[in-house]
Length: 517
Ligand code: GLA
Image (tube, rainbow, N blue to C red; front, side, top):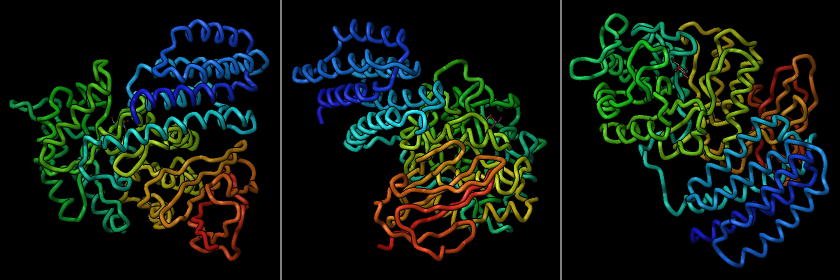
């Protein structure tokens, strides 16, 4: 589709939706400020094709009337102002940037108006917002498929990566024995056979100074045998080795240099050591924008002579979901997780905003697992693991694999939940419904199956919750067989229209629904 036509379509669909969502909106002062601004700026509004002028004017009139009539929520007007600004600017942007503004708007609204998305507040607003986002995303998808655009093309990350990382449990207190023992434990516990193959060394592995040739050097006390020896060791055990660096002058712990300015040299070093995975952090970056730092490493890795999974760890600062796919195999969407219920949930909620940007080869990363580190109860860790799995998050174990309780191993070894995460369709599940602290998450799987997670976030009461076909993407008349992924059994009854279950406090149930009629 020609560029100009896309612009017009986007403007029109955007304006149409603005009209619709303006029902029920209302702080009067904000509205009149918005209308005034709209009025002043539409005079200079960029309209590439004449025939669109008419519909834009009609839309504008409708919008104006709606705004005049309504009363109520300040957030609505503010959101509209912002959306409008983005739409206006969008007409001068290229199509890639158009993708960015959609999620920026979405993220901005979620950040400033945490009530958004709650059907009990204002269903029509939410639905219309979704409409505008969907229309635009769809247009962008066309554009994207016309110009295949993955620069990285390293063939890695067809499904989310699985393995272990040293940070959440050991922090910088690592050495080669700890890494070797973690590798051994992945094998002896059976986790490696289930797919957990990356053994990832996080911050704290290097000397403070590079050598005379400018090469990174492993810490001589903590890693006396060097990284290559470790890579050889894990490879002999059928595993892969990951390493950590930073798109800055120092890593976050500040005890070793980052790779900024040394990208090609460091990528070559990593490749020569036999490294298979690079986590690339964002500290001490001199205020240089991520898009001016991360792609340099992408190109360096492409030239390094060995496929290396590139894990962008930018913490979601500049919405890496918008630009991450051509640059890396996954991108952190949030800052660091900690081992507690609230923080775990807030990571996955932030991550959920970007669901549409994940796909095979490039995944949203809500940070590594805390399962087994002791800060949550077993049923809470089950929620943690289930949410990560359905969200197609990297499954990187963050506990000490040499000291796992039976419960920890049971959770991490749930092959049915892992299969949801690793499903070849590679579509990230989303939060599709929420009422108070009760949530339904769902996502399509291969063979027309659907994964469903039914969550009770209340800490003090059980709840009877229904997942309705309407919400989870099944035709209302579809009859399904439901397999409970934590009880490991197919429910006796078959279901049509909805699945109603009782869920204990801070717990979830997870099912795969298979259409049978
Ligand atoms: C940042 C990252 C963490 C970890 C530490 C290491 O905080 O987000 O995952 O790598 O740095 O210092």
